[in-house]
Image (tube, rainbow, N blue to C red):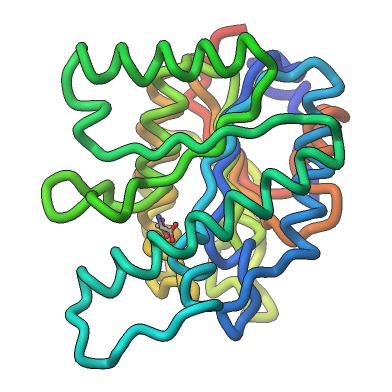
Length: 271
Ligand code: GLU
């Protein structure tokens, strides 16, 4: 079932978006980068840009990309292991994005953030000015947490939180969160009778009862964080689309005013 965005109160044609793509959309079950799917997503992003939509991509996958090319010694403690893998993997990930965007005559740029960049006005202004300058020049910002230095209090819960903060900072028309599930279901997503919930009211806390708290294999977040971030973002006037980043042409459905996943809205969106 697809939700027709025109039926909702907010404008179906988007001028600007933040799109967050999770690790499980970017990597295969064995942890290696899924170059085919990443390429398909970049094709869709290029199509959205060609349609005049300004967008910021929040991409996980650095640790996964690092794991693909390097094996950390088993004795290495967890934080150091994440630092090493992300430091190696971010380069690999950005090189892939650079090549794929170049195939559409687009430039992309790496933006690495920690929680400190959103904490006070001075840091937030620096981040906002950076986004504005890149978007003004038609460059696609590819944002990730700066996992190399983001430790303890500087760490986001996960990239869903980072994407929510970026969406609110940029006051975009919508935040799109792509994972390896179609959206929020009223039961376990794989169970035969489970139904996708196409529309969630951000103020309706009863939806939390539906959340299966298992997390998909490699990413840090899960559906509970997604719904929490989505509700907070929607209550700030920005609708959130949760969808499956492996569904062919999932992003292009936005151009048709449809969404095949779950839309979280507060009904107070700007038009
Ligand atoms: N920043 C992490 C990475 O690039 C992913 C964090 C998350 O799963 O949200 O691997």
